[in-house]
Length: 440
DNA sequence: TCACCTTTGAAGGAG
DNA sequence: CTCCTTCAAAGGTGA
Image 1 (cartoon, chains in turn green, purple, red):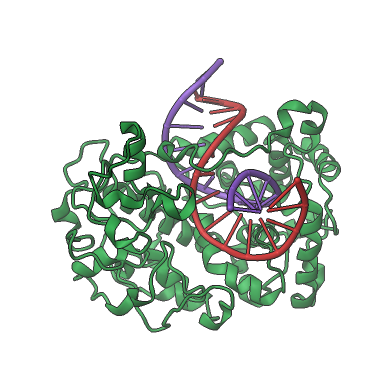
Image 2 (image 1 turned 135 degrees about the vertical axis):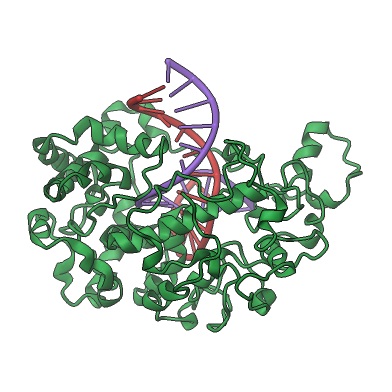
């Protein structure tokens, strides 16, 4: 499928609709976002509903240009990109992340954007230098120039790039200096030299970025873990159209990323974060059964969440009553969810139906299946199990208030696919979803 | 100071 | 092909 890169139909729609709360929300986030600023990529990313025709491309289809793998010429060629990513190395400025516009309240661009970043109102298409600027946000200027190994031919740094220094390895920022007198092994040197290119954000991450500030503002919560839980629920409560927007964004994000860094692999970042030790599970089987990861923290966070909810959602009831998936089910399918966000900010409403699944969701060609499949396959078909799982889930998790852990409810996207078949599926979905989680 | 927690999704590797 | 692991954001928390 071809995605019109330039389509600029309804551009700002998404933003408008959903994020009323502007910048001030970002109490925490230092970001400055001028409401008025227009994201350069906007055209590229417009998410007007029209844009997403439901039938749209399964995420995995790499649209337009992309497809480096297939070898389609269009790929990374600058010429193609030019309109969008014409960055000349020198011209680097700061490129706001495509989502930047999406995330006004935060003010932060996905790939951090400096205050000055948005100065250029990118005209719909013409953003040459500006684009380049887009990208560089995270790096120190000096890193930009050097397109280490994987940088896009254009030498365009992507916002995703982060200098090691920032996160983990303090040293190496000399990237600029090829000489980099480091005596260390070449390999090391190379590492240092190359900027850390982050993974593109997925749909949910994009959503989190956008909504985090809101949630924080609404609740007093600050812990990301708690907020993320809320966001996770909300995510599930989004209508499919809404989610589709994010999936779409994410897809573009990945696309852009791949164009900028053709050679980059997610694996490149492996091990950059210290290893997570969380693996309790392997050791303690019993525990693993119930709580895979043993979320000790769970307890604490949830409560807070609740707090949050109660205030906002007067109908705290919304909190999905735990058991009530049925109730949820009852509710009509869900496109309604749309407002849910704003209307019921914190409500944890279970979102059963809402989630009707997105047909076109990500269905990642191959990927789609992966996680989802695993979970879904195992249980999907058995509603009974769902109960089972529920209980299991309960056991495993603290599950504070009534609500089932949303996570349980949430059918991770993939699984939806199955659901897609029939609306009926919806009904089952919930339970199933539960299963999913539990299975994990 | 830094890993962990938490969420979903994507991607890669292992079997 | 399936399953598992890691990372992406983010900020408080505990070691």
